[in-house]
Image (cartoon, rainbow, N blue to C red; front, side, top):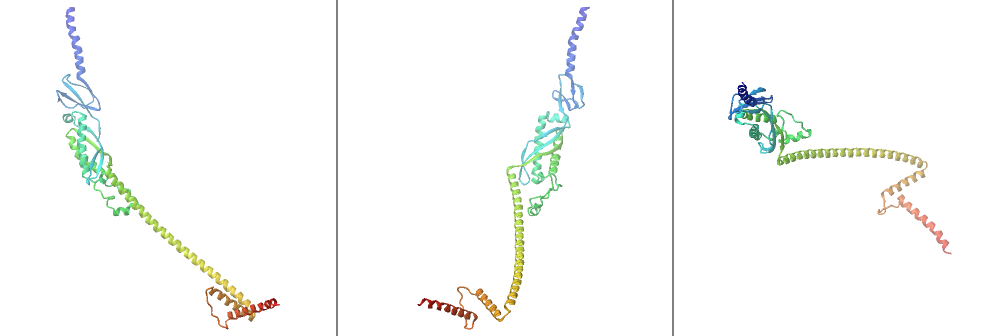
Length: 337
């Protein structure tokens, strides 16, 4: 009896662990953030497992291949690209994507590393093609409908310079949409759904940067020159007004001075007239003084004067000479003894 029991239990001791081990190898857990492809000898078996929970497979012959179900980021490398007018930009893009068809994805790409490599090729190529079809301002500007904030000082300059604020048929968002429309079908054939693609950063290369800075400097210099011209004109206007006002003030002052002087002379003349008209001799003396004043004003050391014998000045000189002789004779007589 004991031998029969031993013969029964010994196989169980071997088979139970083997069954537990086989059950352990056949069970697998699918998480909420992933989906599973079961392969057997490298070939896909059945449909993808997308429901989270505990699942089973054939041990040893079937393999679990886990694939992400979440949204995944793609950060492309920054590449130098040429625009429609051969201006070079350094464009850096990013995108979001997810695996929409696990079976097609696994058949074409197998893993995420290969998927990212294909994303680099497809998105990089479509971005380069889109940039090459548009001008630099269409790629830099956010949207074609946005009205840029303009410096009022540049409005007149912009009317003369057609390179500033040109009308746009495309904006940056339109270029991004164009990249999305051309790249999405190609990625769909690989089991990938492209959710979004955006320009992360756009930089000018050194040549374009120098040209733009030169244009900005030229615009600002033209504005500064216009300000200087307007300032010089305003300064000239103010200077002219100042000179005109000074001339008006000086003229008014001169007129006032002359009026005061005329009134003073008239008063003085009236006083002199009243004083010298009291007697005939006084009037004669006043007339003589006026004559002397006239001579004083018109004669100098280099003037030559011709006098007649009946001239008052000649009579004055003659009387002065007689008085000098009369004074000199007593002095001569006192010196002779």
